[in-house]
Image 1 (tube, helix red, strand yellow):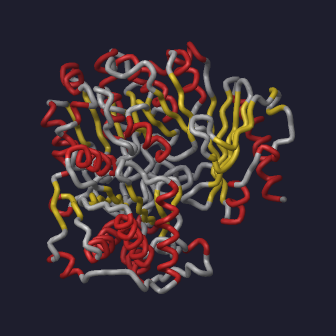
Image 2 (image 1 turned 30 degrees about the vertical axis):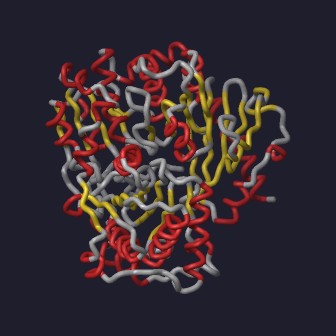
Length: 547
């Protein structure tokens, strides 16, 4: 994909999302679930996402999903409060109110942020886990967010009793019930009026900020950061964690400067991504231009996406780190600086994350667990404490507390950001410097991801890729060593294909939330070898689509 000529620049006013038009579409557009597959409820790797303009995220979707979740809770005898959070997307506020009206009509107690504020994804996970550890009734949660997606998008995901994204069995149940409700004109959906919702007595204000912030010292070495006087720059990118940084700085005596305090549902202050769209992707050097221009003012600078489940790490000398590189550094640092973690504990990566992680974990003599795309695959291991770290190539990760007990079972952009400061404070080296040392030891990887537009039928074909689709014995001049359709770490289906050689690999899979398919590639030889991998991978995918 060619880089848009305005990538890294602020969007012209004329191209910003028309918020009144968007909100009108949310309430007036009616999904045709029975006849239009793209307008049905569909849970991808992280919930149901869509756009009100495309009739894929509208009030009727949320009514049906919220009712389905309320009914699922009843089947599981979940009697504790549901922790409900939202990010700063325009559709999130509307969907939040819709969700409240349905949950309360079903008699569900709901805990929301004091004064109607925003609540990041990891904070919801943390709240569920701490509640279920200390209370007799059990709780779950909902986060209303499309993550880093463009301003016109919306999203909703259900977090289970174990704090993280619900597994496929649960989301399949919820989606099936929600679509049945849509197809039956929402007969069976219970809903209170706005006035009745506010006066029903089922909405409980909860101080998410202090509950989370006061516990951070049990997962991050805050004293080391404060003692080293690390200067931390933060760009919240207009996201839900914007009001957390001042309390963090105050409680732990940290030198934190928030460089952008704006919250605006158009996200007009976020530079255009590589394709010319506003996308709050803290792993993109284009979207992160605002913070990159200030990198010399800080020892470590960090950015996060709107729901704070992703992180972007900026080092003073080198700029924005590659997400895969930071995961490799974080794993090595944590394995050496968390003495209470068992030597037998696992470190998790997705099949499409860098092979550098494999080499680092092997070099440490630790255990690797390779799973399909989606943080839900880490929930069980992190909940039980058998998995120390779970990371995704898309700049999302979380890890255990210092005492090896669970912190969150969803991606946590706060702790990954603060870990970068801890690494610098403890080692005297920033994460990029440590990664350069890993490259010197294990070799230099060349990594690339390609997104290609695809319709539902094409995505279905790609999702059904099988080992029989690979007939060749070599890939980019090397013998093929493995063809995977299931993850070696847990045996779960990839929903695509991964082909590996001694010094390279590619994986192809359809996106669960966008109308694209993705090809991931990596070479430990050269850029030319990576290009050859790309050519052969595309030929394979094209042959499948043409069949």
